[in-house]
Image (cartoon, rainbow, N blue to C red; front, side, top):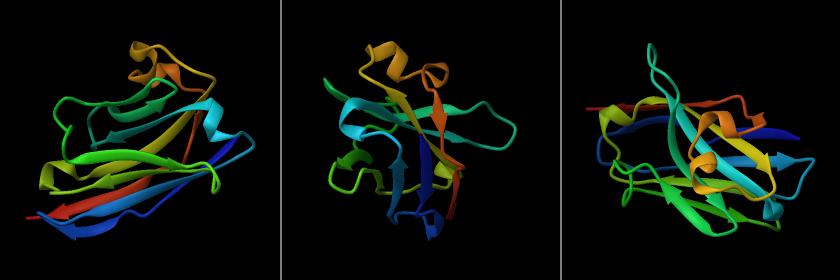
Length: 124
């Protein structure tokens, strides 16, 4: 399974970006997909995940970020709106075969495959 993240870039505060994660080697329709981010000097943190039962988000991001997927393109997206300088980070997509309980889907350790990361920089 390979994941290719893209869509990062430089955006002003209040702007929007859409990240993409193209998956090969496994159908995302039967896979738990997650997004995480890492700020330099900090641990990677959970952003959003999509599983059979639906979506889940980090509490601090709910309402601004939306995870979605296109099964035909085998691609998962992260729509990020009202971006803040604090959202500056490297964003990673991750995959876990099959369905997952909520705590696993929200945990970095619950994923088997990772993309290379895409940099998002939000200027003030």
